Image 1 (cartoon, helix red, strand yellow):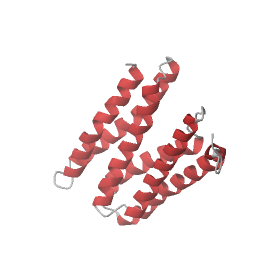
Image 2 (spheres, one colour):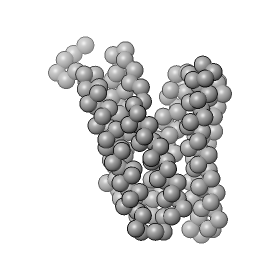
Image 3 (cartoon, rainbow, N blue to C red):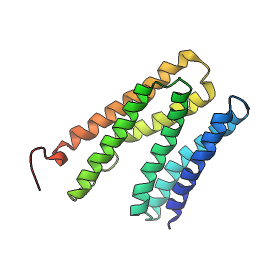
Length: 179
């Protein structure tokens, strides 16, 4: 297993620790800072593992599978907690989940046709803005005025990048044609 994949695995392992700390933070306030620290470190490993994989030629099929999955699990775990706390609306969570499933499905169809759909710039912006917004929200979730700003910072790039993936790769679907 490559160093990059090991770092990605650490991110996956950090997710339950983040969730436990964040879920316990209303009772033990200091755990909010632990949760924030875990979320930030886990988010930064997304950059680190990718950098190492490219720089040291450690790109692997396992890494290509695990890295985006780890990102999705991390951000969706935080969104699920905010939804449970009635701060992140279920419809917004569904938009995020629908985009992730749709883009993953599109990529699977493309792979079946011998084509790889690389992460686009808008997808990277979506991931970055979502992770930053969630970091801010972990600290300031008690401020109602901030909630809608955070929701928009998450949902708008999510919609934009999802639509962009489909517009740029519509030909992969080959509607009405069989291979």
